[in-house]
Image 1 (cartoon, helix red, strand yellow):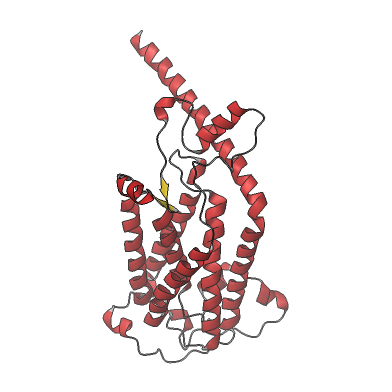
Image 2 (cartoon, one colour):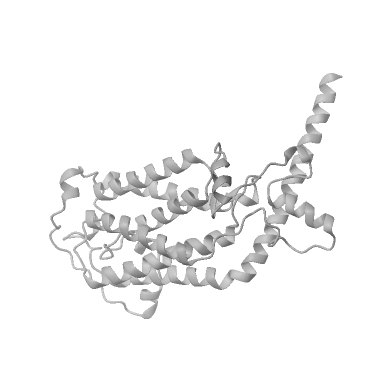
Length: 316
């Protein structure tokens, strides 16, 4: 009899939590759709700029001419991984990329959400566009002989034959992205990684993940050089350029709203529904036992385990 009662209680608990999760998901979707309706121009513009950046990287490949690899201090200090192990740096980059994308969509599932997905991507795309604009200017100014294996003398992929039609220029295929040459200064992989990590540094809540993220970016920097995908100067320039661009653009953009604010909640007919949606969107269910404070100070999220006494004193 006790086991039957336990099974019933467990089924009731699972059903209740599933209902809460679904309501929270629906409330979040409604809010994000409203935000997307207001900011779709920025999202679309950022995506178009990503295509233009890919188009520019493919275009410079037509101008690339293979030659002797330039003298590079990183090549002397870091042993060459070899063509068979060049995938290691791509694996690290893919991990950083996918982890960040998943984090930006965590408000749809988890309670402890601090950001709006649409607004965070508007910010990230602004950073990427600023950095990529400078990158296009630099690699079109001077074309260096690529150090990558497929860009060296004797490789059929080192140069592209003149296009037969406009579609060959405008159509960007994955193979062309992976085997591009000429777009060296500065590293595109470092642009994405640094923008993602800096964004999580400001809006993320887990100190351990932040430390791991910076360690991953440093490791990726070394792996890019060791796999001979870029010269050391490409990585060095990316480190200070991306950080400066993000710093100055971040100063000009309006700060993300606090998730505890109800201004961006979907409009409902009665105040009870508004209060329920407000609780769902900020990680609180209708159960008062699950309420907990959400703290955001000067646009930065307070990390787990930190107190806010200093912030309160400064605020006073």
